Image (cartoon, rainbow, N blue to C red; front, side, top):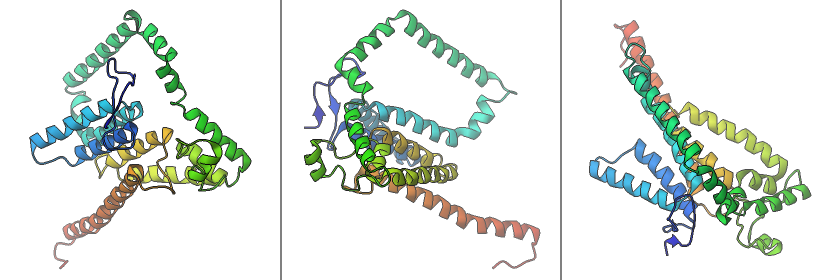
Length: 294
């Protein structure tokens, strides 16, 4: 009841996809990625609970076999790692006065590049990659697992009404019955969803909102130790094949993650606004020590 059987992905021999109690393994993998980012930002007090939580998260993510979420996890960790350890990296690894760490870093990069190059040239990986894309699983990956057909339907609806689109009722039960797309509850892409439902007007709003959200995520990234930027990048990767900024339908984990990002940004800006008067009082007290600030 929690596994999808007879699946052949990138992991040899693993023919199961773990879905848990979610609607699909991709949905579960998205939840896990957000969970791991929050766990890194706010870990448990107990070391063993923390270790167990990370183990469950990683094992579940591997079993879910969502390639998009794997990439999103790596990008999110890079975002959080940069803001959490930026001072350490600049003072230790890239410290030219003490080049030991720099030499080890460069050596590790050279060894990794050599191993990857050897694997590509001498291990027959090229033939394996060709065989994979020639099989059914590879063909599904190239066409985003059948999403290309849904995108073509979305484009046709946009062509019929290019300014305002079909409307918010697209992809509901009535539209599914009319179009024959019974399993398509949305356009499986944020861009195509916005284009088909709201036309050029909706796309214009999307092109305005996403950069603003990115700017605020970047603005609050340092104080949140990279969590806002990591969640933003996770939503962007999710938007490639799913709908992260939906205004209709049920309130799912993707919409909850979007609201969580807005809450974290608001909390960070509120904290900064409260901290500035305190810092200004301390500065003024140093300049005017005889002044009564009580």
